Image (cartoon, rainbow over all chains, first blue to last red; front, top):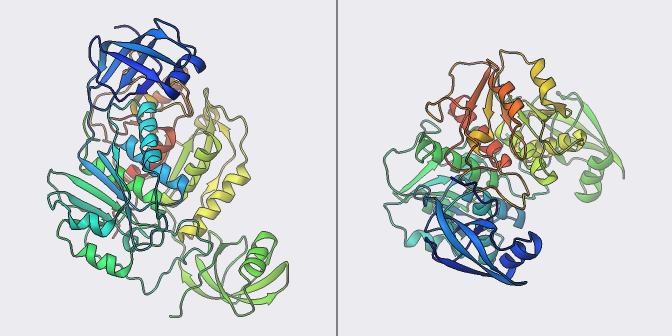
Length: 267
Length: 267
């Protein structure tokens, strides 16, 4: 086999042997102005559906160009059927969560608004671009869809009960209010976790779709917690004995799920 | 018991019943100018050795003040005997690794210089301050020591063989060169990992001290990899089937170790 292309691009076009793809805008600028690719140069393309394809530059203009798929270099590799629900944090930490979720492998990312969520709006397109960039950098052939910010209550009302939810609650994981001037003291009396006893890391076995739910800065409100805890498809989990920030909890929970329920044990 | 203080400070002074602690500099400014604490106000203190103590403000001046320990509010809680060795990345991602390692629980953080490490110098004091801040925010009573940047070769020469090393190699975890303009293609032919077959997540059991070793941008050099692989106390690990950035790999490896070897299964 020939050497693979070093540049990897996500495109929203069908890919297949002989398929031509026109490139414009920032991608064309990057390839032809920044990287100065000429005709005959090679790039790798993926679209989230057709795997990865090697492609050859066939036409170059200043602001646009065309590439033609020559051969498949990787099949589509779907991550396990896992969704991530998280309450948006500050910009940097929200971006971080989207990047890490894409790398660690999820199918869908759902920002949810909770009683204590500060972000009232979210640039969905910006977060989706972040997921695309993470996939480009990490050699992924799939890009998770980033959904619009949805109120948690509404997301849970229409929830398919077959998709179990791994609930990382501040009562368990001890979330730190992000950017808090006055962080909570270690001993938080009067904040008894409403969690059944049992092995901290135990979780129901069995295949099927899952979602991870990470709380906002400041945790869930008491009515929210009661509502979540009452749902039969929700499984609370404790992420170790130490208090974690919400973004740390997201990465730790994704890792934990991939190890126990996902594809990390595959050879 | 009375309500705990909301403000939590790391101090480098002995703590115990009746012990007085003088506060100056940024801490005094924060408490007395920003938060406007008056005499009688309460704060929580920890020093990484004596647990957490509730303290009462006894004297207030503009730029300094004194607090007196009243009662212990948490015993010293040491994380498991785990070190993190990592090759420094860009500033934000290096800061991120120190913050996350502190939250997830390590005893010591050792930045190591490798053949492909870009950072030639590192502000150790700045990173140590990051670890302190993470501990303050997360209710920890212990702060990991951040060591000076040390060449990996030297760190391994004097290594205590009783401390096993969980080696997260780019040949396994597939590190993404951080900030790379041209990310590597998914199919990296000619980069066969020098890793024995076996369960991806298997690791030697048994108690004892451990360290996690995370590679730099661009991975380890071939001579480096050969040298590391030959060490009898080194155990390579594969962090799932997808390619992870170095900072993601650090958090995932810390999580994985805490679950399999650390204290995350404690009730």
